Structures are given as C-alpha cells and as structure tokens.
Length: 190
Image (cartoon, rainbow, N blue to C red):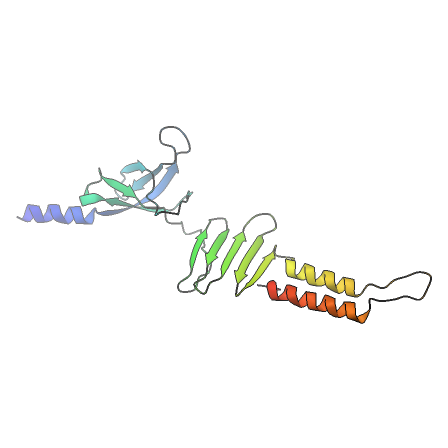
C-alpha cells in the first residue's frame, strides 16, 4: 500500500516538469521542434503546444512539460516563458499583448484600444483609441505633419510686383475647419 502511494505521489509530482529551452530546430525532420532540458536533466524534443491562433518562436526561457499520468513518454511542451531579460509591455487589468524580446508589441486594451509598436528603424508606432488614430515614429506623427501643413498654407504670403497678399479670411476658416477634422481623427501625441 505504501509503495502504491509513493508511486501515485511520484506521478502527481511529475505531471508538470519545468525545464530550460535549449534550442530550436529550423530544418530537417525535426523542423519547428524545440529541445528542452528538464529539471532532472532529461532532454525532450517536440513541437510546442500552442493554443489556436497563437504561435511564437522563443529564443530562450523556461518551458513547462506536461507529462500525462506523470509519464515523460507521453508529454506536451507548453510555450516557452520569456527569460528575465525580456520585458513585456505595460498592461492594465484585462489587457492582452503579443510581444517580442526586442521590444516590439501589439496591445489589445480591454477598453477597446489597440496599440502597435514596431521596434525597428524609426520605432514606428500605430495606436487606435477612442475613435482616433496615432501614427508616428518617435519624432514625428501624421497629425503634427497635417496640422503643420495647413498652418503653412494659411500663412502663405505672395511676393513680387503688387503689394504682398495673404489667403483670404474665408479660405483660412475652411483650412482651420479642415485642421479640426484632422485633429478629430488623429491623436496629436500618445
């Protein structure tokens, strides 16, 4: 009886096994499989078990291996958890994110907003929130460019022969109304 209890306890203890990501196979018979070294130094290889609609290729981190009945011969490898050097984006309760170890991310806000940060040359950011859009690269954004363009058009002064002229007041009002429409569609900053 005691031996059966010990066997049952070992199976329960070995139902979930933690391990360290070792490598990912990129070609051959094992393409897209990963190698994980468990806490007890056993090496297992298999494709990660991702939920429908999600897929990732981790470079490092910890993995959890689910062993059916505590038997490592029938196992599934759950997605690799990021290492300590990977910082996910800031989230509020109810938010969800997809992110990379290099700083790129997509955040789905429970309140309805979507934020995209493409960590690449120029740091392109696209955000949709409260019916407005933000598109920028860290130093300029579309709203600033449009508003600046309209202000420059409004300030046009002619030169040459007859006295200098400016744009008539009615046209300036139309341009100001157009600028307000742009500001109602695009965010000026994030």
